[in-house]
Image (tube, rainbow, N blue to C red; front, top):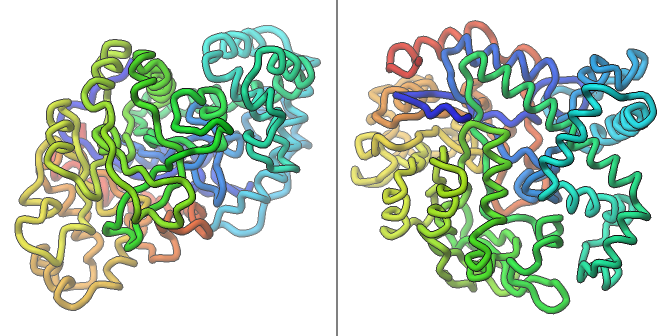
Length: 499
């Protein structure tokens, strides 16, 4: 059941990989529970995360091998020990360094632990945990069977895309699939087990958050990675040629973030085929997301109205065109299957009146970003005096520089505009912007953790159009102090956002 948010609300944007901890990346262990407790003491009722799936090239959660699966690196080793799947002496040596994620080191440490836990589960476990495992396997079969086979076939030591597998497997011929499932039975069971453990840990954390008055905001990227179980298992719903290669890929034209646009490279949908199947794949995708989160931010909402299609092989996103998406029809099918959808529409970038009309027709909150508000006229939609009540305001998103970094790059005229608008000419502009967001008419305010901590550009989460150096920031131990919680709680109370 999803509790709809009532009244004004507030929260923090922090991906679990950015939590402190000793094992290379943040996970679902002790620090995650401490962060929930920090949010509660800070008067916050929302915790926004990024996509939770296995990370792709460059460690991006937006380029995952599955739109349904969980990231094995988020699995807590201490949880495995507490459940008897590992012994105390299986504890692993901490990874040096605290403020940058080391995905490679984390995987080298955790992969053997997961294998040992699986071996013990296979040979020594019966009773409730085994029953939960079988229930999970049945409940999630619609995506889990294909994903676990995909992972078993995807040799991590020989990273070959699925289009280069044996032709019979590429075409998913029934005999070839049956043979592969038999040949890789143990490996399939291993990947199913890993997903089960992630699911158990995440649901426990989410229940803890809900019990403490904190609701999870998830993230649904509109597109999926080409080298994913989603595309391999559902080739008919993507624009692919006879060899399985994309004919068009997704992106956006030149905008605030990039002079050449953003060439994401994801395959685009065959919306006509999806419509003929009553959008079943999308229904299952949202069903899974809303089983793990309380609300969901839909990344690139405008793609449901029209998507930027770039011919495969282009080096930039400049030479593309808009092609119509499904519009209201897909949301009618989703609502019919799942009920009222608790989602936020990410409507940043080039947004036309008809995209806004679709969002308003659906009654969905859009997004406002304060970093986009200054340096132009008073009619700028991101200035708080132009906000709609049904909206979510951020100082910045995961794709922006931190607010400290952004402020350091402003020209004199724009900085003066910020100071005049805030009525603040001292050096505490970051917290003045946070106060502005809290005081605004926007129903929801969410602040990136880096801005609460006053951190600079080196801690930004992502620079669009780049591959290296992203998704790596981590909070240092003890960063989320009681003093910080008290300051946030005072804002939540003063501006009527504490439920």
